[in-house]
Image (cartoon, rainbow, N blue to C red; front, top):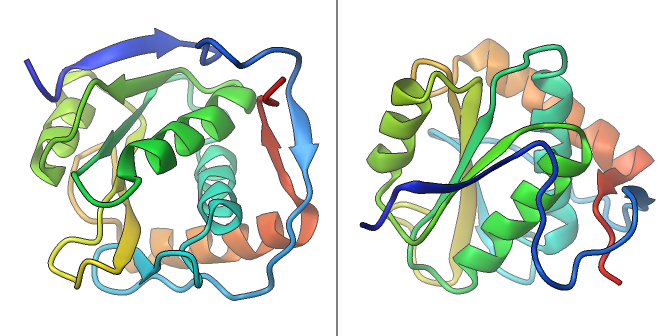
Length: 173
């Protein structure tokens, strides 16, 4: 069944990931700005692993102190699964339990999983209706809907902090 959560862990484990969490320094200064229901950008221009990690770190910091898991999902766009795994990798390195959906699914499946699993929130890799050269991230709070303007402003602030300070991620060995 597509869209079901398959990884529930306080640390993401998969072949090829070894060692302890470490800081990956940020190398980009492009500000991350959320638009209608998420942040979207052209892949390889502004939608890069560095910026995806920065948003994932922002989510980890935003949810600090909330013991509930975080859902991570993705659609069928170019490299969406790889970006979703990168989000999960950063969240796990920050001590978050991650429920990583086992395949591409519509955003609504991730939202439903957030609510049905009692998760703290979710991150969905999708650019929705944007052209194919775009990808994006949506943050879904614990009620599964769109984040409020206040939450979006905080995620933007924390993303800028992550861009400046670097992110915590499980290293590849």
